[in-house]
Structure formats: C-alpha cells, structure tokens
Image 1 (cartoon, rainbow, N blue to C red):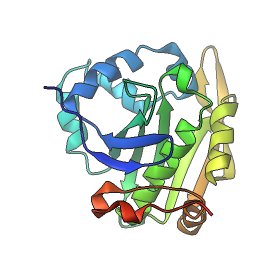
Image 2 (tube, rainbow, N blue to C red; image 1 turned 90 degrees about the vertical axis):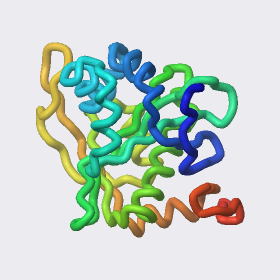
Image 3 (cartoon, rainbow, N blue to C red; image 1 turned 135 degrees about the horizontal axis):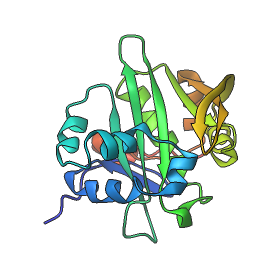
Length: 208
C-alpha cells in the first residue's frame, strides 16, 4: 500500500502533508517539466535529477537533512494527485531564518490560490515549530505570477540581484523578497487554518 503521508496543515484550498518515498515518482515527472525549470529553477529538483540521478536514496537524504522541511501540496477538492511541493530550506535555527520555495506543478492548478496558501501554511509552520523570525524568497524577474503571489502572501521586496539567474540564452535579475515573523502573524489573522498536530480542530482560525 502506498504511503499517504501525514497531513501537517490544512487550509481552505490545500493541505500540506509529509514527503514520502512514493512521491519520488512525481519528482521524476516534475524534474522533466520545462515549465518548472523556466519558472522555478528548483535546486531541489535539479539535485534529484542530476546529482542523485533519480536514485531512491534521495528520499533518505531529504529525510535526514536538518536544514530543510519538504511538504507536498494536496488540493482539498478536485485533484487525485499532488499539485505541487513547498519547502523551507537553508534553515538556520540559531539565527531564525530560512528560504521558501513553492512549486505548483500542475499547470491546471495555477491561478487558483494554491501556491499562495501553501506558502502561508508552511510559513506558519516555520514560525510555530521552527521558531523562525524571518523567511526569504527569490524569484526570476520574468516570473510575474510568483512575484504577485509573494506580495499577496505579505512578502516585501528587499532588493535585486542583478543578472544572478540564467535561463535560455541570457542572464536575468533575481528579485529578493522577505517577510518577518510579525508580518506572518498579520497574515495569519486573515486566514482559516488547521494544524492536525495540535490535536484538535478547535485550533482552526476563522478569517476576520
């Protein structure tokens, strides 16, 4: 029987569950998707494809990596397969910061608010469980969808890494965003979320 994983957080549109060994089949598909390479340029997928050559040992490496948290995005209705992946990586517990990567891998699921909500849910997890005080994100200048999603999430643009990214036949600027713990808390007040690990659905927060 396939490992269904454990739901960590649930929102209106999506839930986040633990990454399982069975999810490697999805990673294999996503790593070959040109659209994801163009829009995300994920080091996570790159490592699975090029460093581990899609070897199953990648799962164990992720599981034992204390510098990242990887969760799978599941639509609450309408999809039988995962619609993406979200992770906090380069986690620095002492300094209290990490980087956010959000991938909505099914193009039919784009522009439905899935990525925004998934990013919020893992940010709440990062603040509550990991004690993060700051989360950063980077996006290519041409990825307007992700830029708008980060702004809707409450991120603030903090700078531009000039010509720091490469895709196609040219270099692109990389825009740096950040969000602080108190800004995450402001977003939380507007959302309805449920953390199963708290042990009761009574912890759901109603939107204001």
